[in-house]
Length: 211
Length: 402
Image (cartoon, rainbow over all chains, first blue to last red):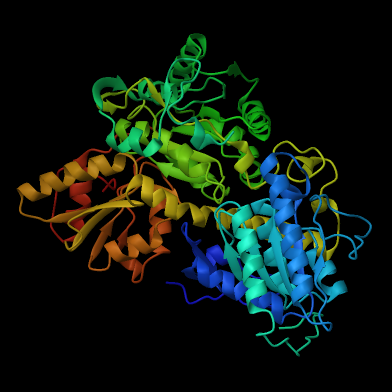
């Protein structure tokens, strides 16, 4: 088993892909936390805890759930909205839950507007600008999600969560696989369950996000 | 519609779309006496391929022509000859970008001519399958077996497997799609064999039922958008971030490359499950091991038999996949060996170099015997090499020109 751990950064000028460091993806019914395979239930609890600890917990929905290209996508979008509303209800007034879309993967030049979107080619701009210290990717194509997660790990201290509809993401600090409406709703339930039991992180790093 | 929901239904040729584990591991097999080229055709008959494009070059031309018959019979939706190998591989990319399951075949100079496309396929995460029937690539011209072209393919980001027999070839064509189309892998596969030795010789191959076929490719599980002209990777050639000169663009490109190689790593889990491991071993407690891939493994088996007749015990490691590279498995299998003999059908000895880079005490590796340019590798020259290592004089064949 690899000794490498997928931890909040800033890790390196060019951090390695976690898969190249021996981190393996979970099997069905499992998740991973920091690169260690865990039962999925444990991942729900930890993801909810990280959301509630963060000053700016943020959901980044991608094009697979932003556009109603099939019935399932529309239902997932509704579930994500529910998770966002739950987060807003469960955080303290000192925290700010956000939902910032990744509508597409086009490189944005001359400059992205980090207040309204995130882009996989330079995700750190949005993380830094909004001081996001915990984020969840959902509905992002796997290649683009891994690209973003690795860049975020390299240059920020943001805690990353992946709610992946396929096999999961070892470049996130915590990953679910086979994401469904039910799993998103279950995460919202866990957020509600842990409300009030988690202390908000006080530390703010120079990279603009805390942990 | 999800692919799993199609299991049990029929395609337009009346083949039953079958759970692949059942098809490959449980369904009855029919022994058939076929050439390697005919075996490629029979595998593709069952592979639910959408598009096949090729350009004639020996020794893959026969397989490409036979697959044309499958097109005429209605097993393949689209089939045509490109203008050159470069054109073929570009056209394969277009078809795969459009969401098709794509198959092609090439060899030797054709592989080299098309080389620019292979890192592009991998970078664009296109799960195209390409059969490489390896042959000489250098001047003076040779159409005969030689595996030098594999050494160029292994740095492209493609999966690279090296079949020993026609049976490997049959099974791995079908299983190859299952690995390369996994969303966490989603990379092209170069399925290599030693030209002529495998393609033009007949062997008994156990075939799965012809009325069963793989589920169709589901492009909606792709890790990149399917044919989105506005976004990378399709947009790469128009206004790519790689054309911008700034730190962010470079970092994105670097991260992109890392992701391709991460996908190669992820393929290990799936490949081990489908191929029953990345290597196959026999008697690894022996002091001497033959470690090789392709038909050099077959020659090694015969050398082991000849040496056993003289009371010399030699073990074997057959390497099935070059990418992903089974370095941990090779380290484990060779940990007790005093001498590691690596026979190869190429002048460069690329396989021995890979093995040396993977194990401790790499001076145990004997990068020999090497033959190339179409020469055969008589088992006696492997025997001779082993006897040389053991300090035994042997006059059977002059394997090193001595």
